[in-house]
Amino acid sequence: MGHRSTPFLSLSIAALAALAPQASQADVVYTSLATALTTTPNPGGGNSDGTGVWFNPLTGYAESRGYFFPGTLFADGQFFLLTDTSSGSAEAEVYTQGFFSRGNGVIYASASNLNPAFFAAGTSIGVGTGYQSPGAGYTDLGPTFGNWAVGRGFLGLTLRNPAGASASDVFYGFADITVNDDYTITLNAFAFENIAGKSITTTLTSPVPEPASYLLLAAGLAGVAMRTRRRSS
Image (tube, rainbow, N blue to C red; front, side, top):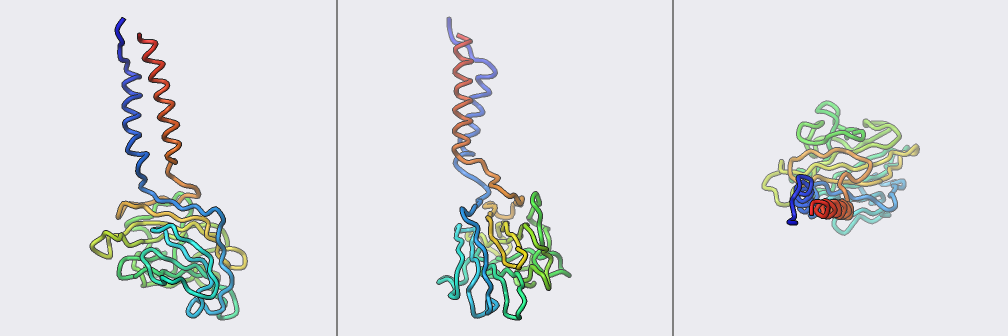
C-alpha cells in the first residue's frame, strides 16, 4: 500500500520549518548574571572614584570595580551604578557612560520629573515611554531625590544602534536592579531589543526560549510525524 500524507503530518512539517529560523536568531538579547553585583559606598560621588557596578547590554559586560574607572570610560551602551556617599548620607544613582549625542540614556519619568523612571515587571518600554532626552535629566534613584523606593524594579534604557545613522536610531533596553535598604544597588540582569525602535517588555527571566528548547520541541514534532506516517501506511 502506498504512503498517504495526513493533515497532521503536513502541519508538523510546517511547524518544523517555522522553528528553524527562530532558533538561529533572537530579538531580545538578555544577560543574566550568575552572581548579582552590588555597589559599595563611593565617597567620591563618581566624579573622582569609579567604585560601583559597571555594565553594558550591547556587549554583555558587567563588573563590580573599586576606585579606578574602566579603561574604556565612555562606550555606547555603558552605564555606571553607584552609591554616592560624598555628602555623608547614601544616595543611589545611575550614570550613562555612553555618548548622549548618540542617543544613549536612561528614560526619565516625565519632562517635569527628570530623574530615572521606575518600571515594574511586564511593562513595555519603547517609543513614547516616559521622557527620552539623553543628558537632560538627573541621576538619582533615591532616597533624597528620585522615583525609586527600596526594592526591585527596572531602569529603562536607550542604547545607540552602532549601525544607525542618527541619535534617534536606538535600541530599547532595561536593567533589572534592586535598591537595597542601605541604598546600595544590586544589578540582577539586563537586556536590549536588537531591532532598532522596537519596544521591549521588562521581565525577571529571559523572555527568549533557549535553542535547546527549540531542538527538543522539533524532535518531538518529528517523532509525532513519523508515527502518523506509519499509521497511514
